[in-house]
Image (cartoon, rainbow, N blue to C red; front, side, top):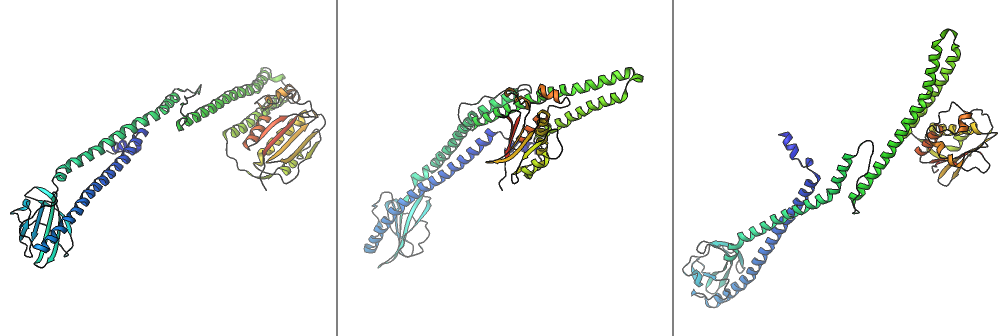
Length: 455
């Protein structure tokens, strides 16, 4: 029973069913309220007209009774108010219209106030119809008289059921028509969504593909564009992942193969082998493997967007401290004033600066220049050297994973080829950029820009 009730719950309905039900319910309520108001207005209009005419008939009859105290048959002036009666102070009928000849007094509540007309609706058994009665108790020289003027509501009573039925039928028909229109409109509106759903279901993990964007410029079209943008990003992620896996497998295979080969050769003739030399070579390969794994873990964390706490950092002070932290092969000239605030993770900025300084030291001939400054909304860091420089066609490629130029491999055979990649990812994680730019004096020039924090 509980499962059945859960299935019948609106929360389990389709979007089309929920929208159709909600729209139909609202329209149905509006139609019912409108019909009630319309019927009430019609009824008030009819009774209002009868009230005015009945007052006129009673006034004329009251004037006649005061002047002549009529007896017997009364002449009908208004054909609709054909039921006329005059009662004396004892409640006996003393005058009447032809329609009430020989009839008892109308069963109407006695007037509460003299000389004030009151109206009532009563049911007359003899004519089997409702009667709209206007009555008034007046004082004459002949004594008190009670006057009745009634209009049979035969047509209204006869057609009341049909009229109410017609209005109810109109409400049901209108509600059903609205439900049909809304259901069709929602079905047409959701048709592109169903198509997108089918296309997404057909997309495999190998090729993300795209969904069809509807021609109409509406919310569904925006949804399709957003889905395609997400699929495009996923495609880029998958391509980078495939490239990353290929690069990692290649870079890890080389030191592992070398380490295994050295150990196998040493074990073939263990007595004549120089085991300290084997251990040093194995340690070198292990160090290279450790460096690659460490850099890969850093890249994975940066790529996954792992949240790292950030704090306000004096950019100039951090640059001076890191640049002067250890002795280098060539002198380092530093120009980094205080007061350049950035919101950053200090450890990551230190890793970025260390990578740039190590790269500059590797290629510099005689000097390295490090400058930090505020440029508009950004904090800018430049690291330059007087080495051979970077060819323009390679200035983007050096940021790829495991990409090392020939000179870099010659100068440092133990590098992982991930330092500049990590540096650029750190810059991007801080909302900035890192590029290799032109250097008028020759050599390499790296420019880092990250958003500065207002004082």
